[in-house]
Image 1 (cartoon, one colour):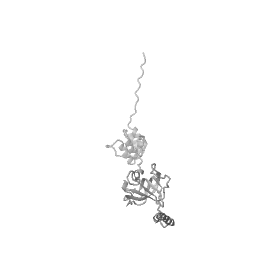
Image 2 (image 1 turned 90 degrees about the horizontal axis):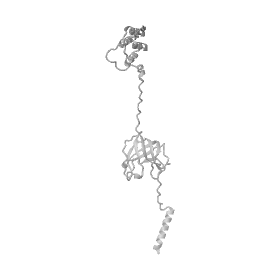
Image 3 (image 1 turned 30 degrees about the vertical axis):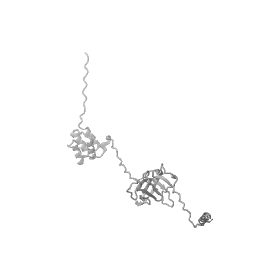
Image 4 (image 1 turned 180 degrees about the horizontal axis):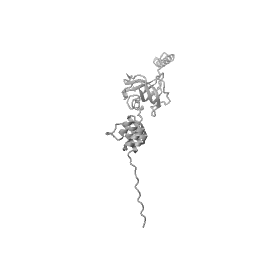
Length: 257
């Protein structure tokens, strides 16, 4: 008789003790923190440190502030695209080295591009994880998780502007540069006179009296202009030595007999 009554009495006792709080109720597992896969640009604000997780995996951990982010096209199961992403505070990045993550040389103030799962942790700080390639068995969500990455943003060196060459027609207006050609040309005497302080009238008289031909190249004109020789004197040099063309007389018509 006692044996038959033991079970009902035992169950009633357990129920009574549980109701009175004598036996602790089973702990309820909290729900997963909201998460979403993001692509982001960030600045590293704390020096990275290597740690080992409770599961024995090697991790690289550091904190960043986000400059910009986009919700990734591919999302893991259960993702919430409406998760609020913190653009003001520090975000903890957990880069799993044991699951295919590269052991990167990251320093404070570096700028990084990353893709991973953003987790809105209750009480913060929020974190980004799974920044390694997808497919690592036993790591995170394995094949069910989109592939992530972590890479340094390298500043682009601007290409210097290239000044196009000036048209050939105005080359004589440019300053004289370069090395003179070997041998003394006829214009050298005029150049020496100008360097000695001769006036334009004196230069023109020397050109008229010398009756020389001055085959001036573009280089020669540059050299004369650089020395201060005026355009009028240069024009006189170009015209000097040219003989006037005398028209041949037209034979008189012979009258018809």
